[in-house]
Image (cartoon, rainbow, N blue to C red; front, side, top):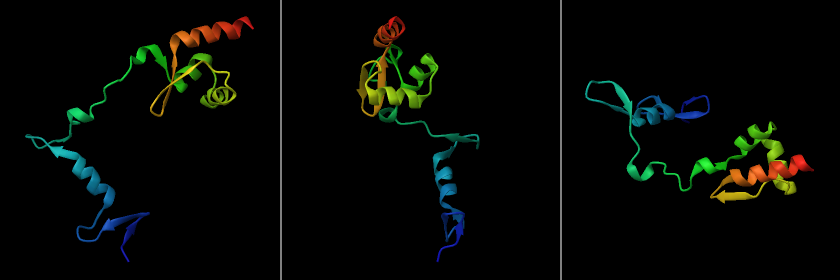
Length: 108
C-alpha cells in the first residue's frame, strides 16, 4: 500500500507528492537561480480564430442584460436568445445580433 497525503498518492522513492513533482517540473531555474515559468511553445500560443471584439460570451451577455448565466442558458434552451455562433465548444453571440435582439425585446 502506498502512503497517501490526502487523496493523492505520494512517490515512495523521493517521498514527495505527485502534485509537488508536477509543480517542480513546470518551474525552470533561470541563470540567476530564481524560478520562472516556462514560456509556451509558439504552436501552443493562443491565437484568436475570430475577432473577439465583435462577439460576446454567455457571461458577457448575462452581464449586459443583468441576469445570471443560467438565465442565458435557459434562453438558449427556449430559443429566445440572440442567434448563436459556435466555435468549437465556445458559444458566442454577435454584438450586432444582440443589439437587434435587445431592440426587439424592448419594443415588445
